[in-house]
Length: 419
Image: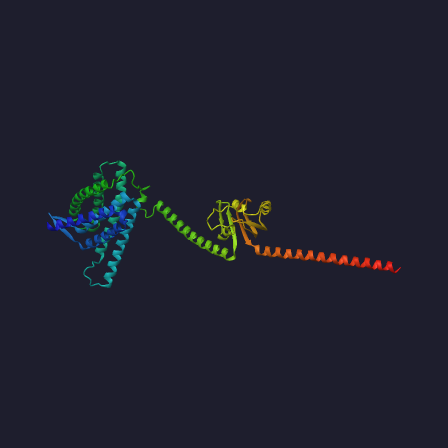
């Protein structure tokens, strides 16, 4: 009797652990929960093979089935009805993956150390593994289909609904596993009968705990995540998950493109600063405008202090130059004067390039301003000097002409006096 009480306490401990970890899933995430499911899967396989059991009142209680398997089914059931089919499918994948890993590990250890006493190996063992894994897969499918069916017939009492589902799952598991392992033994029918009675009591007790838990978290059948069809219950990737995966891939691709764009923009910005050119860009598709840091400086602003605007940019161009610019709305290359926010003006070489789509609609415009003020000032100084020289030359030439005329007049007077 003591052994049975220990088994009961053992079982309840795992049941409460499942409920506790699930209730704390928002703080802890579902990772610890899935970790416990993985551990329960391994323990179920190991102790099933070992045949560990407790006998009380002439009733055979397999420890793996009573404690670990029931806890495993409780966890998957809670995942399905609360977190949705996707979470339950992840649990199914986890169970299958861990089961396969366990079988491979047992096989490898047997061949690595044939004398090992803790490894059971042979066809009967593989048969047990096979039907154990098969039973778990069928049980998970029954959880989904059974609960959706109960939802359609609208059983309002949560305790009855949960108890019915768990008994259905346990009954199917008994039929699949016990039939696969014990069908050719004299004890087959006795094991089936005894196991179904035990499972009925387990279902009622588990139904009570799960229904209380659902009430505590204010579970509602109307708002839970439901599968679109029965295939989604067992399909490893639903249409929604495929869409999510596709969106995740697209987001990842866009993040990479954004990163590359930022790097390109930074390189472009450094290049613009290096060549000392003020640049603006207008995207007519998304109505966005850009000014380089140098253009801000040209206009007398700190970078980012004003919103880039082509209309605002025109206000800084001297009026006569602005009129000339407006007269030529297409691509152009002219020299003009810009009066900055501090009323200082400089000469710039302005180049404008425009891009059009196939229909002739303007989609982009890029303009650049190259500082040519020093050149223009030098040209003005040079022109002023040339003008001065021309004036001097003109004055000198006039004096020479006057001297020649005077000489001619003097010569003429001398001739007249000599007569």
